[in-house]
Image 1: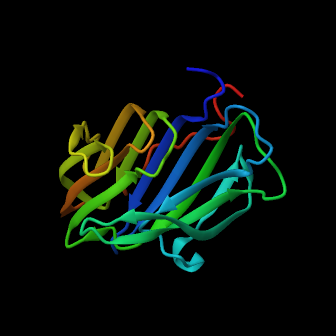
Image 2: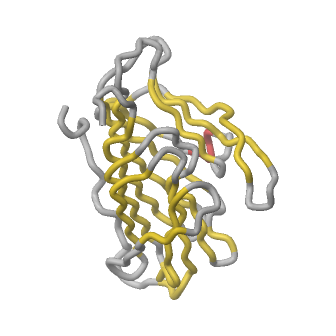
Amino acid sequence: MSGNVERVNTMWVGAEVAADGSIRVTEVIDYDFGEPDSTRHGIYRDLPDLMYDEDYAKVSASLDGARVPWELTTGDYYEKPNGQRETATRIKVGDPGGSVTGVHRYRIRYTLTDVVKKGKIAWDAVGTGWRVDRSDVEIHVVAPYELTGARCVHGTNGSEDACAARGSGPGRMDVTLDKLKGHEGVTLYASRGQKLTGAKMALPAPPSGKAVGT
């Protein structure tokens, strides 16, 4: 692949499921901006289930380990399972007064409400809105209860192509994928099982610092 092709070199996604059905998501994205372009200020994330309210979204962001400006705005249209079209909430990450080139590590955190409905999880861990290819994708989910019937699908919107969802302990699900092409995503499914007792299940430590190779 040409070194000038814009892409995501690695993507780490972690989700902590709360008892109220919300999830706290952490994304660590090593983004290669490819050919230098002085008009690029950063990246954005379109999230259909993110509330357009800073008090609920609880967003934070960093670039190469340092705080970076962000804002909530209106994103692209997406199609709901019932065929209805709505706009996603967009997190724009970057300094509008500066530009970025090369490879950089973004760390973005946010909260999604009402992900667990009637004891069922159906979560688009990686959405299909990504236009660039992504390599070395890791997804981790932890919950305060057992996750039963865990499964994973990947591909373009509506795909049912299975991917491997493994559990490394009660209340945890892990998925790894070598590559996702543009407009391919990952959806995780599970049901709420028995409440766990003892120590709280924890996510593995996310990558920190600067992007690999920089």
